[in-house]
Amino acid sequence: MQASITLAQYVKRRTGVALGGKGSLSAMLYNSLGASNFAQFWQYWNPIWSYYLAKYVMKPLHQVLPGGLAMLLTFAVSGALHDLAVAIIKWQVFFFFTPWFVLMGGIALIGQVLGLSYRQYSWLIRATCNSIFIVLSYYLTHLLLVY
Image (cartoon, rainbow, N blue to C red; front, side):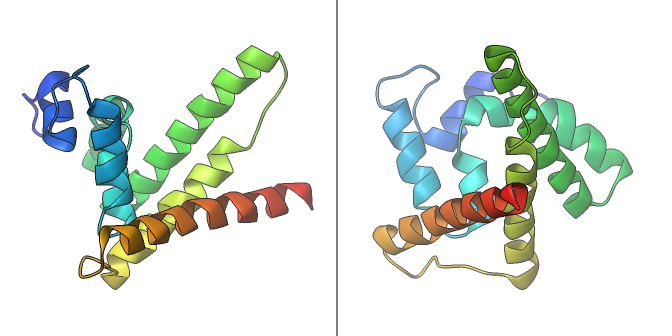
């Protein structure tokens, strides 16, 4: 991410729609689900959250750590913040999003390393692949934490 890019510019670049503009949610869903690989899915998913994660977590970590490790830790921070939000709402310790997000980050990283791409397939196939990665990682996380 460029140092001088604003949130509004970032959202417009990721969704093609102005920040808060009509159709921004559907554009985000269309772009993220139709991404050509799982790492690219995350480039389009929730651009407001991604902007701040990139600016305040990923970029500083990447200055001192290898890119893959910085990426995994960014997923972990995002998961931990989600866990914290649920813990505050439920007023009890909650630990699910952190391992789930780390697992999804690992899947994205492995896909990048292997050069996995489903760009040549239709949007529906790409959306199915990305959805499978999300659902499968959710299920695996649930299994790991229950047993």
